[in-house]
Length: 60
Ligand SMILES: [Zn+2]
Image 1 (cartoon, rainbow, N blue to C red):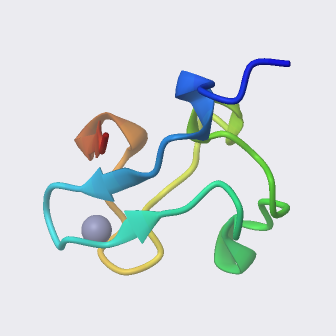
Image 2 (cartoon, rainbow, N blue to C red):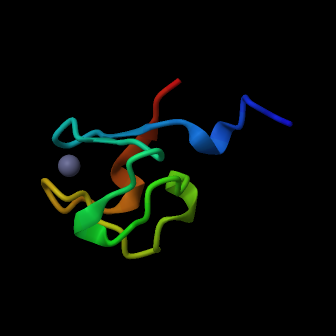
């Protein structure tokens, strides 16, 4: 068991400060709870400001 999976880290939108939490997912993007940010769809957009995935940074 690897409890320190990097994929479970939350990501923050650098444009508006929205935080994507893998445990919660994102209803607006139809992302199920438990989905690592890296596994969200390529066309995932910030639900607040519609920034692309490239605009997100990993939070430790
Ligand atoms: Zn945003």
